[in-house]
Length: 239
Length: 364
Image (cartoon, rainbow over all chains, first blue to last red; front, side, top):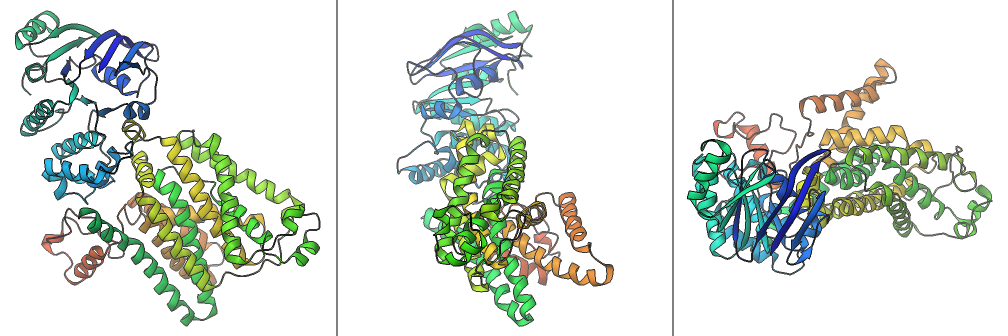
């Protein structure tokens, strides 16, 4: 589904991502964790087309997409749930969902909106409300629902649990687990290392813009914590 | 079900807004010819500001140059409605295809809008790609260019001399119908998928792009569409004045229309309608005051009003909310039992504006 090879991304002269390579197979849920500044969001932004790579290749479904604008990437079936949610606060909840389908041309948008409201009852309750009035957890649900509205082949989640109350964090991870059961291909960026490793099929550990290791179980993670971050503080066990 | 209910709920906004301007218009003749005249100016301003809103309000990119489309509409509309004989005497060097054109006014308004839209399309090709602030300033440059061309193209516009003999087709009724049509047209655009994408980009360009919105394309569409709306309004305005020069569509009008949009609130159609309405009343009182203070009070008063809004209510009086039946009801209730405890959370401080949308509009 997604293959990233020797990706390098810079902000001006600063190299944020040093030639990383990763892969997400069809139906897989792959994690990407690491401390602040490791290059997680930068990597995701490059995949989503928000940043263009300095070098390296990004392939989606076998086609090279490096340097394409974000709307072209969305058309290829990749949907990003951005960091900090970034819902449209002056649009209503329903409009937020509707705009998530802006690249679709089929007639099932209304049915999908209904389905999303079924799944997230809070969205139905506040359908006509400006999204800015929702709480953080509700906004995160809206952001994920909005991303799902494009019927993505690949869902990119950028720190969906960031800044949420513990109960909401549980809810978000439960939701990601559900999506995984439904067979949605996902790349999940998180700071919450333990839970991510638990959930994902595979987790890439990023440090200093390089992939430090690939973890498949919590045991691997402990090793990483010792080797790279000197303890478990940096990867963050439970929030 | 949600769709149908939602549509009925939403369409009340343009209906109420059109009704609002209609009521004011129907009352105006009671005050004599002078009041009728003021109502006419108010209606035309509603059309212009709603047109400006369809770009600046929905895209979040202020334009200092949309009055250029208005002047293009005014000249285009005038040149194809002045009787052929009169045109021969007035503008002997007119290009023949214009010299021999004579249309009745409703059609002429549409053609004038089309000409302005074409100008907007051409301008949008390079300009729509610019970042927001640069786009605002680029539109200002467009205004200056349009003004200079119109001021010096003697064979077509008579340059700085007034264009005379423009048929005065714009009656109170015409202006009212135009304002209502403009309100409905721009509302339909605002609620369409195009309008939705544009509004998403207003809030966060990057996030909008990340979910598949082509911001440049949406802004281009808005520019052309607003060019059309303002072009039509310009033609109507020209046929209200009967005599005009390029100065009628320059800095003063640019400031006036932007002030109206800012005062009403550029984040909702309601703001774009009540801005010109409120300014019409404000202008009336300030002009009365000018008989005491001497000239200048009107402009200073308007500028002060804009300043006060920017300082105390930067999103404008409507703060992004639309006029709805439920907000009217809320207003009358709040008048009866102001400071009701259950209302404290969501009532607005003044009774002259619609209340921000509440979660369910239900229990108060």
